[in-house]
Image (cartoon, rainbow, N blue to C red):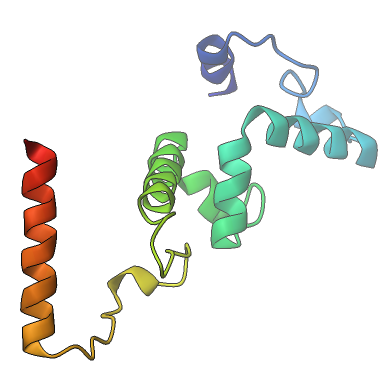
Amino acid sequence: MINLINKIFGRQETKYEKLDVTNYNPSVDDITDFITKWNINFPIDRWWRRKHDVAFNSPVHREVSFLDMRVEWEEDKLFEKMHKEDKDPYRMNIGQYFVKKEDNRTEEEKQKDFKDQFRELMQKSK
């Protein structure tokens, strides 16, 4: 798997990827260096683990593909961009997007606002 990743990203193998775990006990510095390089090379992976509170190399982490992480990252960026100028901006990971906002306007006010917005859209399309 690591060889495939190296080919895709055009990276050379490091000494950590060639290690035979049965004959090598890495030092704390080796492990720290490996994790640091991993986070630098795969920032979306780091983002995903922080978002879902998943430990590095845990079974849940190993189960998820990079493609799934990337799609989720792109989706969050899209929603962030869509709601950037919204009065009640979208905040990731709290389920706020589907909460219905309270509307205290009368039916007449709602109809007037709808007609005004429709006229504005029609004028823009000309």
